[in-house]
Amino acid sequence: MHKENRRNLDKAINELKELKAPDIWYEIANDLDFAKDENLISAIEDFKGSEAPDIWLPIEASLPKPKSRSKLNWSIAASVSILFVSAFLFYKSLSDSASETISYSTEEVDFFETSLDISLDEGDEDKILDYVKKNCRRLSQTCQNPEFKGLLEAYIELADAKKQLENELSKGANQPQLMKYLIRVEKNQTQVGKDMLKKLRLS
Amino acid sequence: MKRAKKHVALLALLFLAFRWGLAQTKVEVITKTVEKSFVYKSGYSLQVDGKSAVIDVKGWDGTGIKVVMKLISKGLNADVAKKELEYQKYAMDEINRSIVIRNYLLLPRNLDELSTIQETEIQIYVPKNVKLGVKNAFGETRLSEITGQVSIENEYGDIFISNLEGPCRVKSFFGDLKLRTTSGTLTFEISHTETSISGFSGSAKINTNLGNVSIQDLGEVSDIKIDGQKADIDLKVIDIHRYFWSVRSKYGEIEAPADITKQLKSIKNVKLEYGDRALPNIQITTDFGRIEIIE
Image 1: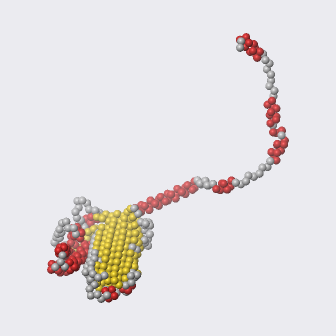
Image 2: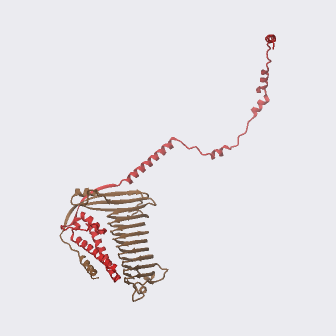
Image 3: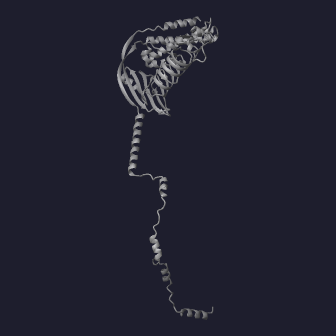
């Protein structure tokens, strides 16, 4: 656009008269005013509505009830727990510990005064002789008892006899008869061994 | 052979005991008594492991298990007896669904021998239907009024069982075994053990190597099987016709009512059978033992 023309246009716009806009918003507001519609007002006032069907009760009933968190329940639970723990600890302390008492008394026992020593072969595999050997260290009174010594000698003698008979048996002849002797020797040795053990226990 | 006879004669002489130099002396006795009770739960077992102990187990009406253990030390000097009592140890524990009771002697390394006599007595009270296992060596085991499953292993000590109801398994070596008024299934593996059974009902299987077996007062019996090897077997019954008999001794004598022996001239190594097989079976076999059946 030419500079002269631009100046003329600006001048013409500046010289235009300012006109007031028509009040259309007032008219629109009047149209929207419900208060003036009497029919609508009376219809709203006459509207009573109806009760909604009772569908929430069964739904509520089917829902899990929220847990009670009353302070009273918590305190009862705590008390019961403490009681249980205390009872358990008390019971455990009772069951874990054994009560011990020590008493003193005096007894009279048989005592055999003899100084004869009993010698047993070292490395004997016979459990009876091993037991006798160990206990005779403790129970010297019993083991020095002539009766006990007699039993011990008999036991050792019978053990020797048993070995000899077993040797004879290994050679062959007259097996059943030898076997019967062996059984008699074994039975007697067993009885002597038992008598010895009883004497050691009763001492 | 002469040598063997000489030995047998010698042992007869050696049996004659003699006593002299007898005197009485006072000894100090220190006794430590330990008591403990356990709650017995179903499916639990009681295991007793004794060493040179007198073990006495009794049934009672209580629901739990009560143990009273006496550790005893006897000596000429009270202080020494008290000191050496400390070497006696015990355990009473609940381990893996088992209640375990045991005693043992624990000597310090620098001590070779004790100068006192050490003894242990274990008294246990058990409820009904208990599952009981007892091991003992060089001690005596006693069981009475027990209802339940019982297993005993004893070496070098006697076993006494009375009023037992239930299956009973016994292993015994070098001891005597006495049963009174028992019912159930007996399974015995015994050697060098004299066995005496009276008032028995049920079934029994007895394997014995050396040591005699004596049975009397039989009640309601299903089957009895005895393998005696070198043992003598005595059996006393009211009426032999109530049973089916199968009897055999390889080298031993058999003494029995004529119905069983059939009046054979020699019954050695002959299997004698008598009766209806549908009746309770009594089967006895030995190699060298003597069999005696008394009606």
